[in-house]
Image (cartoon, rainbow, N blue to C red; front, side, top):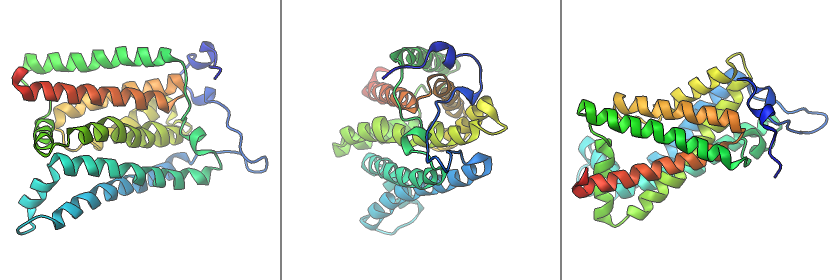
Length: 268
């Protein structure tokens, strides 16, 4: 594939250099605009939530004893339940995003920028990601905070007990990056970047929405997630590729899983 010249990619924070997308000659391609993107974003989130809740509901029905809040917490915090719920969220997001994008008269892969670009962006992205993650880890140690969220340690332990660590890796390192990046850096960014928000506003707002998806974390890790979201959004703009952010997101989650396993072994 021929990559766009660097000058066409790096000149300014405007969506003007987004690759031209060819649609039906009588019906030119368009984006959904701010409000339709937001409304469809809510629908996509609901689909993601429904796909995940369906798995939790299934395991609740198999639960012995009364179904109450304690049973819900016990079931939902198991590694097997969480892994399957994350995996089931992916087809739900794909279907919802497809239904939204079909109204734009633009090909699914083009609207979501599912195209490859230079490996340079991967290396740059990894370097920036390492700076953010390592910097956050160092700040956590200096301030006496936990390096990894306690939630991750608990989930890993139950997954180890169930023998489903491999499924947890698939869920966190493949399914979650794909579904979340298609939603945030794919759908939301594209729809909002071509409105009055512009690229900077689209990066910030889509990063806020992405951060809100991680309700299992406390405010301290929210800030780390938001920082990563800004970096991924910037790379989405510079590379014109959501595939790049999917790869980086997957690598970040894999590193987090490895770090959690290392901490769980008593080395942290």
